[in-house]
Length: 121
Image 1 (cartoon, rainbow, N blue to C red):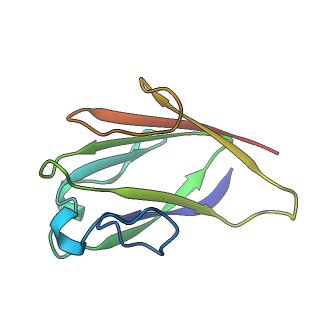
Image 2 (cartoon, rainbow, N blue to C red):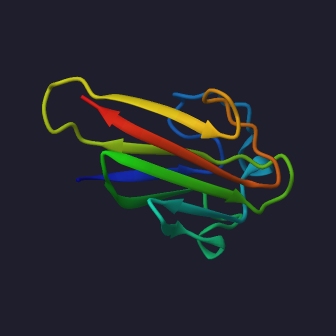
């Protein structure tokens, strides 16, 4: 098992590495539940109009599951990044799948989204 951080950038501004269609506070998620490997790591009390991002330490395993339930207004956005320091210079390949959607495109509606990934090296 490894340690890492989950960055929860729920105003969509982040570090510019992803598509930024959000305009600051207008699309910020104000309530959500984030579960990592069966443990609630962020709940409704962790979000709010004045909270732009969270950094949550997590234990990264060889197989990991992230679950997210958005509870904010329709059209809100939440971006999750799991960051891990590489234990060596060997490449780490992470494969992701969502259920029930095909591929890795997430369209979030009023439901709980689960993401499972396995690390291959």
